[in-house]
Length: 115
Image 1: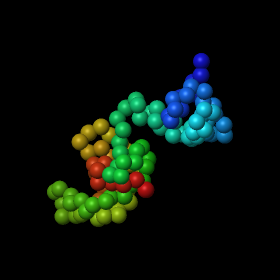
Image 2: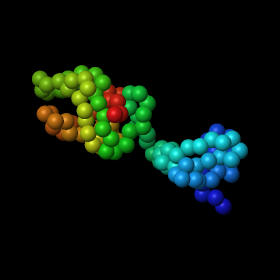
Image 3: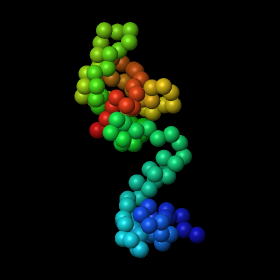
């Protein structure tokens, strides 16, 4: 029995792997092995997406798409601020991170865009 995924276009079970790509001999559809691994990971748990719909993962770099006022402080995180090495958590604010000049904080995925 084959452990390769079925073709996402025609659902053919005759896919094969060649140089890091899955290939369907029936419809000639090709897709990378990493994409198939990401799709299978999505099926298992919660999928975190940025404002543009891109899938976010731990360690990604994102930018802020809107000025964010900080509660309890006079500071504001400006549009375009880069946030490196994010950590995804299952809470009201989906991203835990450290922002230079502000420190550790939590952000919502709807206010960031993947770089």
